[in-house]
Length: 326
Image (cartoon, rainbow, N blue to C red; front, side, top):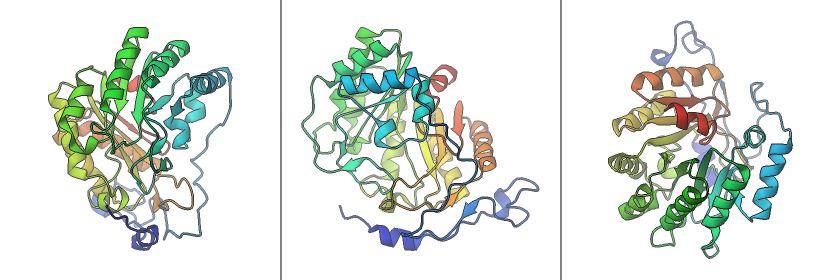
């Protein structure tokens, strides 16, 4: 699989423009004004964040408890590996997303800060350590995700399944959400996880159909949609996530939402892309909070049981509330 150089991606982006037909009455779009901060991305320029990006980076006792527990048990979190802007809020609320199967990914998505390379050997005792952390922290809802492990026959699905079993054994009242890769379309791998009956099965589609080949070169848009369809056939409550600001239009985002509802996806999260480093895809556009609010309204009208939509929303943001409300 060949990668499209970032320089080519950067040069392909143009300032976003939304058609007036998709705008709310008297909105900036309909008045012909910019609806959000948009610009021509540059490899040498990282724009100042809009005023609505304000995060309180406070470390309280719950934050420190999670950090120390993860260090003691030699576990990873996607909160840290993906540089999530909400980790202070979430950890202070005693919620975190466990990253299993190591912290080195076999794929390179151009927006993701997780390291790409040759992964280390699978640690067979890792599921037990995750379960121990869930128990020690007294979590009511645990979210488990992983890097891609395309070199493994089942993509690491057995580790997901064993982690669910271990958590059930040590913390039977804890609900579980798994955020899984596509396993290259391996149906048996998906079935092995669904057999353990996690409360929510999440697979993030991340971007729109047009951008998929360039931004997620080792993934396939339809394969992700089909995975969610098969998970629903296994009786799962399904969830997916969409990142805005990588060169899509609002109408393309709506198309993704409709595709997800076509396969009866229950929950969707929609958030703003933030460039992790200068080596990653630049931000093509910052969406206004009002546009996220509009997409939430439209998503609920489409039939999603829960829509978490906002600039700082990430896949596991408010995950416990989503599990209880959806």
